Length: 216
Ligand code: DX5
Image 1 (cartoon, rainbow, N blue to C red):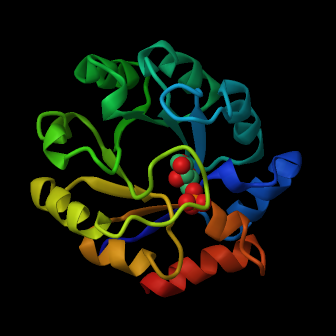
Image 2: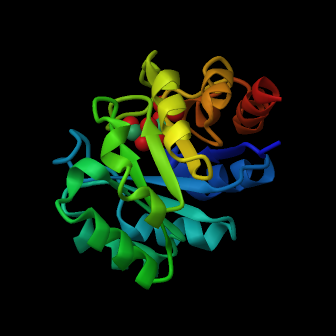
């Protein structure tokens, strides 16, 4: 039985209390922390940079994922690895030299992951799968927290799992106690959750517990 990992993403955290929010998520059993990096070009939002990864690094020893929702990610992977990210995710749509970018991430000593937007086919990943540890199947159009889970996502996850039996399949966007079982049944093993954790009415620990309970 593969262990399902729960990865709070800080996009929906109270940034005025980021350290406390991360500590709460860690105490509540988060497996990793995801920092959502957005450049205002690849997605219509602007969020964090390497400084915030450094700040999160000071608060926890958990692995930090930097999800680069940015154009030309190859220009920034060194800064995010140096800031303390141990896994760098680049968008398959954001670079014309994905193989070189993935290899550069690994040469810097980090793990390499690829994220794929809702309208991009999993077929585009076939050649890069042997070189990466994780695919993040975006279950919303990236850019904002609190969006609605895209209903066709489980079918897409099943196709990816058939292509890559040993890969970590991460999902990101609209993941909560209702949608988590759907994606896990389809083959997802890593659940990114922002608003269902940091926005949970009973608090962060309750948000994480609800997801874990839902996936058994
Ligand atoms: C892209 C962001 C969000 C975030 C998760 O929009 O990367 O997917 O991590 O946000 P929720 O869990 O609130 O949909």
